[in-house]
Image (cartoon, one colour):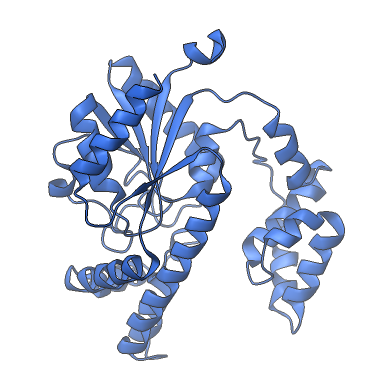
Amino acid sequence: MSQYQSEKPGLTVIAGPTASGKTAVAVALCKRIGGEVVSADSMQLYRGMDVLSAKPTPEEMGGVPHHMIGVADPAQRYSAARYRDEARAAIADVLARGRKPVLCGGTGLYIDAVTKPMEFSERCDSALRRELLEMAEQPGGRRRLHDMLAEIDPEAAARLHENDVRRVSRAIEVYRLTGRTQSEQAKLDARREGDYREAMFALDWPREELYRRIDARVDRMLEAGLVDEVRALMRGGESHPTAMQAIGYKEIAAALEGRISMDEAVALVKKLSRNYAKKQMTWFKRDPRTVWIPAADRSAGDIAAEILQRLEEHT
């Protein structure tokens, strides 16, 4: 380790798929090291979405301070660049008080935004964005939009599915505004030094057991008032451009509007949650920094103890 690297502040990251028990492990670790949790969950940012985002309860927080939870209104657009700036400010505050930050969550882009020197374009062209989104709504429009991106940035097109209209259109918009593709920017970012000495751990579960945990969590969310929470969000009559991407919002809303049955909505929420977990695991497995920690048949305390031992071995 170089002197420059050793002078960087340390940052422990607890990552992994949804329903893998990240919060419990992060809390257990914080109690051992005098730490505080900084959430890296793109939906727990929003107020009024406690059940929908599986926001940790006061009991689950166990007296450990949590940051970057409930900091935005659901009607707001919340970007990765804004998250990076606010999360880093929270980390700096934790460090300034002599505490240790633990970045915990399953949103890989947000973890990268904090730990990697990523350049985000905050510029936008509303007219172009509207034009691209309207194109996507036309018959065959999603394919044409994706083909447009493939001509500009083949790497991004290979990474993004044509149904991911929001990200496909944003990649085109960024290129039109900056003259640089997102793939080119990523390569430039990779050559730069990050600001932390991060140690990144992810919780590893046998797939079928993880899926059972996901289904059970959705059942608990229903018992905790998921339907009423979605109904309240709908009642506001406001557009929730980013928050409505939360799994469960559109599905439960469709049932409340009578377009599908509630049983169909619940089954769809479980299916989409399992699919999301697959994507999360793929994201973290691509990251060479990730150390996978077996989680099955182990308590959060046992897992935290192993992580602490690994941290001490590499200090």
